[in-house]
Amino acid sequence: MTDTTQSLDALPLRDDLRGRSPYGAPMIDVPVTLNVNENTHPMPQEVVEAITREVAQVAVTLNRYPDREFDTLRAELSAYLGHGLTPDQVWAANGSNEILQQIMQVFGGPGRSVMSFVPTYSMYPLLADGTNTAFIAGRRAADYSLSAESAVEQIQQHSPTIVILCSPNNPTGTGLGLDVIEAVYDAVSTYNGIVVVDEAYAEFAQDRTQTALTLLPGRRNLIVTRTMSKAFALAGARLGYFAADPLIADAVRLVRLPYHLSAVTQATAIAALRHRTELLGNVDDIRSQRDRIVNRLRELGLTPAVSDSNFVFFGGLKDEKAAWNYLLERGVLVRDNGIPGFLRVTAGTEAETSAFLEHLSTYIETFEP
Ligand code: PMP
Image (cartoon, rainbow, N blue to C red; front, side):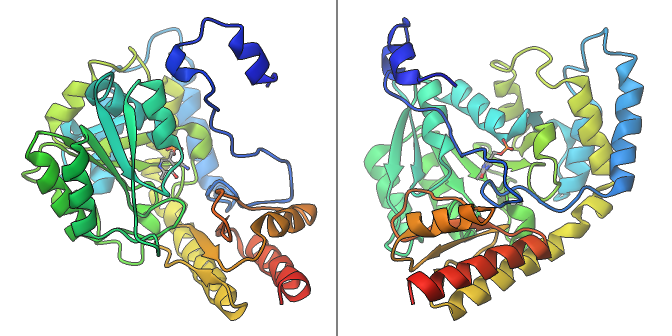
């Protein structure tokens, strides 16, 4: 990337984008990469072979545009989600980032706003900027929790067109009670707003029955987004999706690009879904590595948040930048979300998790006893 501040000023950039920075989690080639919440377990060989076979089959059809309605993929996704969902309630795009962008394109825009409760996923304000939607940063309690009462009060104050609830929340990792989602929905319904529950990490939750999918019946303006980037270990394939009323899927058809999901993407996702037992087989190990991190960090006197995800957000560091650098110098990349005293680490394989814990223990014992 060039020195953007200098070069972008010379361009006829939209005024509202001047001075903005792009999404920028560092991409550094190190042995232990635990900074973007990927599934770091190796892809099972049989799944690699199944994807290869499925992609080989579509390769001969690549002279044609793909299935614009991705019927087979929507059927596979609705079968995976269960909860009585039908294919017409499911929509997919290139990552849940594109899903969120489409939602903001169709329901946001000039004169409209989107509210989320910070700290939360850093892409929400960027997607708001890109779609010229005002971003309203709602507040959380000092321990980063969000009560129904506080969320509703803030919504009543601002009446945002769209509310995004990230559950489990990134970067804190903690899931939101369904009572909060119900209360937010009721508040937003008074003016026909939209509620998005971003469940990118749902498969890692302590209690997997606590999903907003159970709230969909009778709630036309509720959208639950998911991704294959995390539990399904398919970040590189770019496949995100949502479940909602069929009318919501019809609405995003107004803004999606024609044939936005390539035939290769569809084939890859279909093969992965058909082999979900093998792929999701690593989820339990990731959850136990996560719990191991939480326990060890507590022993070290740090304050890890309750995690329903594949990462742990922990505070109690005197100098998080020094800790981040110390780990990086030893080949372990974690995430600094810019919150003083806190870092975030993805639960890796057993060996990766051990490397992180050993180096962090030494750092604490040496520099922050
Ligand atoms: N939502 C949340 C909360 C995330 O953390 C991420 C990825 N870090 C995404 C959405 C986007 O994921 P993807 O576009 O890969 O589906």
